Amino acid sequence: MKAISALTKIGLFGFILVMLNEVMSHSMWNNSTASPPTTVDFALALYGDQWAIATVILGALLAMAMVGASYLVRDERLINLIWDMGGEDL
Image (tube, rainbow, N blue to C red; front, side, top):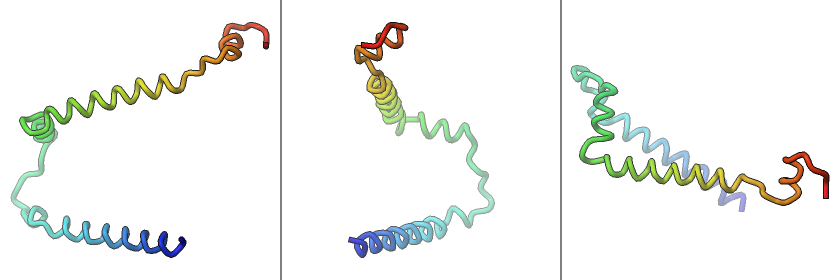
């Protein structure tokens, strides 16, 4: 089992190295005349034609997850409700 875990870690490390090499060898890094993107460019890319629906759906899913997490955290056992109200123990 430890061998599989070690092999997985080595494979993951190798995958990260390959991905970093591919990203750093992109021609975008060699182009020094282009201006860097601004926050307006980022906002237009995020809320433009391509990603607008995905962003709205992701926001709705995250909101539902927050509401669900807050509901699951509540503790409504009778003894806790009585203690919160300052009553005696059962």
